[in-house]
Image (cartoon, rainbow, N blue to C red; front, side, top):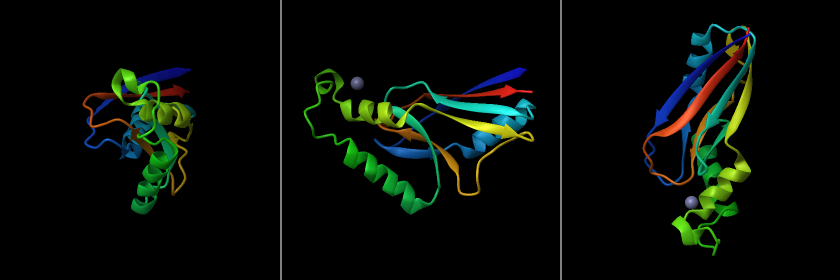
Length: 137
Ligand code: ZN
């Protein structure tokens, strides 16, 4: 069993946006030399998330619209008295901070229409930390 650990630093430019990390994940898995196992992609922040879905531009907007609809900023969330970003924490909690992708034949098992995205929920921010850990043989 072998593991490799890589940390990305991301700078985001909008309050909410999707950042495509598919190529970064692909590179991390191939560089790991691991043939069979799994790849964890994990964001170290409570106002962000990680998702897998299609990287079509209209759908990417739809995903952000749906997050806005489900987690509206305008409500009197209790956490807003701290730093006015309860909507971002709630979206992060319900979408989730990580995904695990199977690794087979030295590559991540992502389907043709599957891309992996970091979801910024309370940007713009600098130095967002995302871990890519590959584990296997
Ligand atoms: Zn907060």
